[in-house]
Length: 324
Ligand SMILES: NC(=O)c1ccc[n+]([C@@H]2O[C@H](COP(=O)([O-])OP(=O)(O)OC[C@H]3O[C@@H](n4cnc5c(N)ncnc54)[C@H](O)[C@@H]3O)[C@@H](O)[C@H]2O)c1
Image: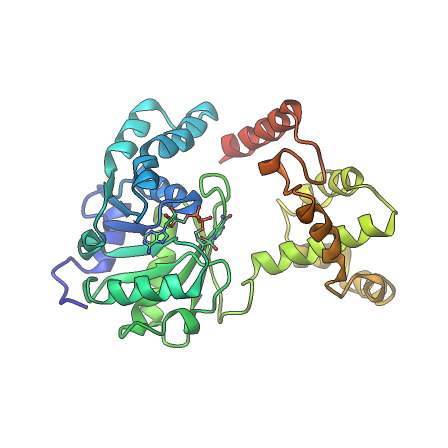
């Protein structure tokens, strides 16, 4: 990595809290679904945001995709048109990766293919300034595996955003064994500064925290449907009318504390042995996928996705975004 000419990172973070000057330049590599969402969030919070993609068509579509995110925020009453225009003006698209040399924080959001990520990191290693942080939005690769091509392993961390970032604030910040503690701290601080809600994991585990919880629930949802006890519609209604509401206020462990750990122990003792533990429930997904029913994208999956259903989800999304 080249020697740093940039201001120290703390100064950038401070700048975000003060007059809005000297904010970190944020680089985003890969402008697909996640990259555009992350870039828009950074730009909205006053950061010059430089984005790069190997696909010129993807790069050309960044502005319109960012506009769609910003329009949804306007529609939900969260920002005005001035903020929209300012955010769009802060997003710069670049065909050359070398532009990342001027960023203090670079997040990679390219496909979840290890060889691709390693090839990119090898290129970035020769470009980034010595005090830059390189983060990955990987859904699951362990940081110690990702970091292999980098010499400055202490400057690498995972920052796992959820889709879409303007609606779901969580970012799981996951250090590798070589990550410098200040890199983890600065990344978390930057995430807060761009309106996200960072949580720092003590160490990497597969799926981090959020996806482990999500897929534990999905396994049981599939198990229930397969058992014939409830349809997909009933399973989803149960979740939305009960845990979906509760978990927005208290998490599962807070909920257990409130319900009484003795009671939860009693229930768990007879219920947990009944819950699904194997992957054979995945047959239910395989059958749908093999039939070309991949969900919303193909118009059908567990549901037939008509316009009314899509409108209903959009309305719910607007309610959540407007709450902030
Ligand atoms: N989709 C999600 O819901 C989600 C959520 C959290 C994390 N993630 C993770 O985020 C990352 C990106 O996912 P996505 O859904 O945005 O993917 P995507 O396929 O929508 O976008 C990836 C982009 O990277 C570009 N790209 C490929 N190789 C490149 C390279 N060498 N340099 C620059 N650009 C390159 C592609 O042209 C494409 O535009 C993955 O690691 C994924 O696992 C995805």
